[in-house]
Each structure stands twice: as C-alpha cells, then as structure tokens.
Length: 271
Image 1 (cartoon, rainbow, N blue to C red):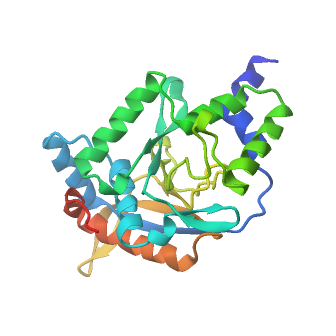
Image 2: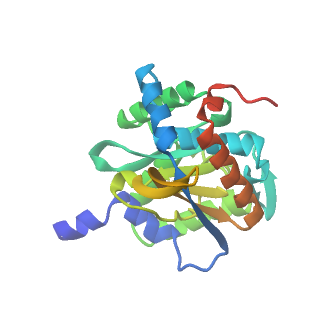
C-alpha cells in the first residue's frame, strides 16, 4: 500500500466505508442564521471571570436545555421498531484530539449543568481522551477499523442488528442502542467552513446532529437600521423516524431565545 493510500485510509475512513450506504433514508434538514454579536461579548465577559467557555460549549448547553424544557420529544431513539424516551439528556460533542484526529466526548446529564460546569466537563473529557481514555464511540471506531475487510462490514451489521434492531446491550464494550447520547454537536466553522449538514451516524441512534458554521460579519436590520453583525449558520439534521419538522421549528425558536438571554444558562433548570 502506498503512503498516499495509507493517508486516505484512516481509522474513520475504514469505519465510514463499512457503515454508510448510498443515501436512501428519510431525514429532515433545516438551518437558521444566528446573530451572535452579543453572545460573543457574553463569552468574552465569562472568560474575564475565569470561565473558559466557547461558542460550541454554549450552543451545546442551549440544545441540551431545549431537550429538557422545550422539545423532550427529541430526546428519544429507536429500539425494536419503537420510539423510546431516553432517561437523561447526554450530549456528544465533536472535538479535535491528538494528531489532529477528530473524536467526540460524551457529557452525561448536560441539561443539568451551568455554563461553568459544562465547560469544565468538556475540558476534562478532552484531557482524558488525549491521555488514552476513550468513550464507547471512540472504542468502537478503533475496534472496527482494526478488522480487515470484509469482516469489518459483517461485524458492524451484526452489532447494528443486536443493539439497534434488537435493542440488546453489549456490556463488554459498553455499547447499546442509546450509548452515543441524545444529540451530536459539531463546529465546522473552526475548519473554515461556512455551513454544512451532519450525517445521522447509523450506529449512533441519535435524533439530531447540529452543525455550527463559521462566524462572519453580515449586514442586518436592527432597530430599523442596517448595521454589521456577527452571524453564523446553525444547521440541523433530524431523524424523521423520531420527530417531525414542527419539533425542529420549536428547537430553533428556543435557541434564538437563549442566544439573546445567555445569562439564563447560569441557572439550573427546573422540573
């Protein structure tokens, strides 16, 4: 195998070639432009107070709170052909790990955390991952990529059949039909991309993948005046087996509300 081929066949590419098929399943896509001018000022204020938060972390917390307070229907997954409500709101956040490898960290009960608590939790999870401690998603990716083709495809299909279709757990590798969390949050803006739509990973069984695009300046009408504002595109891919477009609408409305009132995230949710 040439060096170029080795570069192309990363662990993730080996896994992706195994689990993905040509597009055929029903999905819902949606996006909105979010004015984050004031939100970035809020982030700068928090950093001066010693809270090392980021735009990705705030958006993760907002979506987690939305699952808790506004659209609990999104906090569900498919098991044995039925929609099942999850017991907690767990966020899966895409992050950059060592050797520029993309990975993910899972934050249990993300909706119950404050800004400072979520920021600390994500930082700690990233530290653990870089030191070699992996969550179930990373473990399964590395395990699957190490298996030769075509056995890799057979093993994935068996795993999907047992966990997703039959709803059974694999305690030895900490995998089940809901082990990947409630939703996935990824910031492609840090890679220089303006916008994009995430794939619903077949093995994750999540109802939502949220993508943050690049922040850029754009003229907007504020108080009947055209002024430059900082904006990014927030895109969502939803599992149509679990939710409908109306749930996406409620989600985006809640996100807009919290972006304008980020100080509410410092309060613990009720109920």
